[in-house]
Image 1 (tube, rainbow, N blue to C red):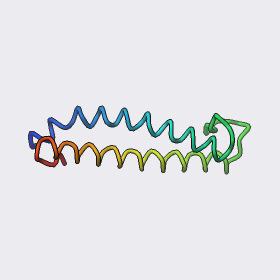
Image 2: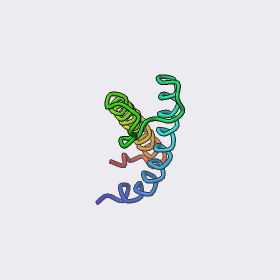
Image 3: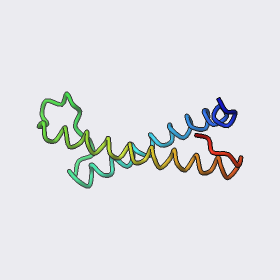
Length: 88
């Protein structure tokens, strides 16, 4: 395994945590805009419909995937700028 990959592991983990927090905030804001509610439904929320639960889950997954890709890519680009090598 290349040294740059090993050195990037802790950076990638830290970026993952930050990305998760950003995605969570973005999802809460998006849900508030869509439904006008602060709390998104949980899968076990008895008072919510299947439709509402599945829409919330799909939206959350899409937001997390986009944020993760953006954060991962930004970290890789920054690593190349600093070290001259691509971490992947």
